[in-house]
Length: 80
Image 1 (tube, one colour):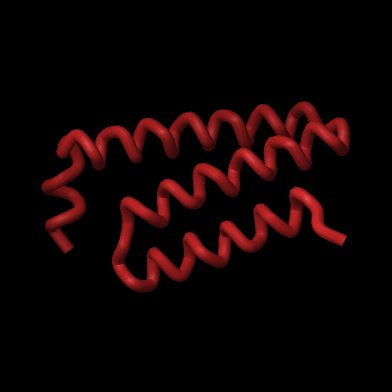
Image 2 (tube, rainbow, N blue to C red; image 1 turned 135 degrees about the horizontal axis):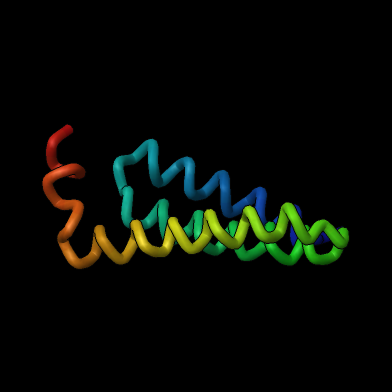
């Protein structure tokens, strides 16, 4: 049976693969979609506190992705 948890887990594995390959922009994008799956999973289980923590983390991830795309984190990414 296919569920939101399985989709979120698959997306986390894809994001980890992209991170391993050094494709940071792609991995952060995939992680954000996985976070959306985890939000729905927490909502299904009635875990509002967990859902709020996931939403805050998703917002912070979206801000980081925006900063990467606009070049504000270029020095930090190229430093390594």
